Image (cartoon, rainbow, N blue to C red; front, side, top):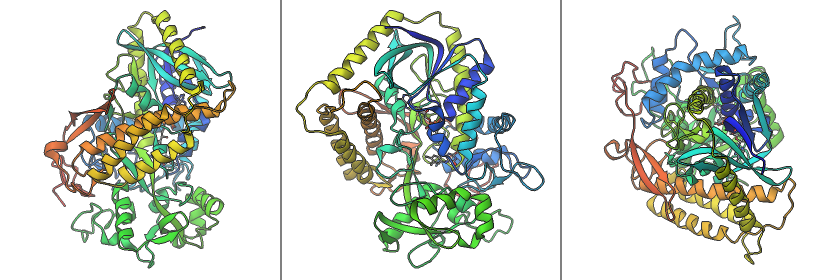
Length: 595
Ligand SMILES: Cc1cc2nc3c(=O)[nH]c(=O)nc-3n(C[C@H](O)[C@H](O)[C@H](O)COP(=O)(O)OP(=O)(O)OC[C@H]3O[C@@H](n4cnc5c(N)ncnc54)[C@H](O)[C@@H]3O)c2cc1C
């Protein structure tokens, strides 16, 4: 078995993976870098990000204000040292992206334009119309092409991390074109595999977002951190789950219930009590409140019978009509395109049906501020990682910037680590890869006589996650979800593939993805069961209060033979002691007591 070998191997060709690859080239162009991606890199989910990427740039903004918004938006579960590094390094990363060719939208005076975004109390979200991720990923991709030391493994699917002597030394990857499982050795491996929204039935996430990297790390003994925190975005198109970006609300869109009433005015979205203060940049947050609160408000409207019923479930309406055709076409043209193509509605003249949709996972592979996991040689960055800057609720537009800042940080740490390693244990790596090939053959290609299908198990899994671990959770719903996930793990052993071909066997990749999804779901449901409080996106109706005494802590889920073991880790607090979550609180370091 031929061994492919690199100094640093990156799993994932999205925003985080490509930023990491470039950072290694910047650090030392002689290092050999591999980038493995199960899809062609430009098809990574980053390409579909619409609204924008946050960083302080305008003179009326401040780094402390961005830090504070992120920490309070996270309901104080973010590590404050990580947030500080993130915010401090963000502007330089964004400017550098411009120098690499990213066409940021401009104000009339030629300066970079910024738009409001949910939970950010001031406009600081850079954008490229409403195709921000598309332009960012193109920019990173074309920049990565400049480095001759980067070898790409496009359409290779990583199935296992290879570890020896307490160190991650490579991966086993299925070359989709040939069906061969090949070992790729590396002195350091960086997981940049994105999120896992597909564990829920209704999601904005691309079909490839099945939590692979999270499950790979989990199986290798690394904890998954804060997995109970799953973000619902308040405005997805019913049916498809296609995202209607927060920029549509940032640019002036409002949400209406079935009576045409702007219902958010009746909800506490964490805004300042004194809304009459004329000096405050925005009097009411309303549609620009944080995503968790807006999604919860939808559920309350539904309980009151104030939502509309459609073929794909209940919904409310997004009204953009007052913005006018010119502004819609200039600022959010993609929103108009999506509405016309997918629901046959022109938002210039009609209301757009929307409902909360699973969008993002705040949790992920446990790393420190440099992207290092507790397993030597293994690093993680981007949505698959939990550093953590997003805590219990990510603020919109922080994620794209996170890919840049922490993609680069993880890469630099991996370069330092690989410089200290002499070699990899070639024979052990090859033997483990052979064992992995055998495992996959035995598991999927041997007759089992079972009746389980991939589609059937996946539908049960996603339905269970929605009913058991959705926007609102209870002990009963979570226990039921945990029990079913346990059964699905067993039943998965009975899955047998009809397609035994070696060339682009999509049935095999679907099975491998489902296996990853079950592991990620297990960590979500069990972590949620153990957290008997409500915080950010994790709302327990049986424990409605935030409980800082017991739960100002990150959860860490470890895989065991049976149910996962859940441990806790203190949150890092630097300058902002936990306070009630109020929008527009002071940034003077005294916490949120001033409004
Ligand atoms: C519709 C949508 C709109 C969004 N809009 C915004 C926005 O406006 N602003 C914002 O800040 N955030 C936004 N987000 C969130 C943000 O886009 C994502 O969190 C971010 O792009 C994730 O980037 P990533 O590099 O971590 O992963 P991805 O871009 O998802 O890339 C993952 C990579 O890993 C590879 N991979 C995965 N598993 C395997 C495997 N087993 N083997 C080999 N390769 C593998 C994939 O091929 C891919 O290359 C949006 C998300 C969605 C879904």
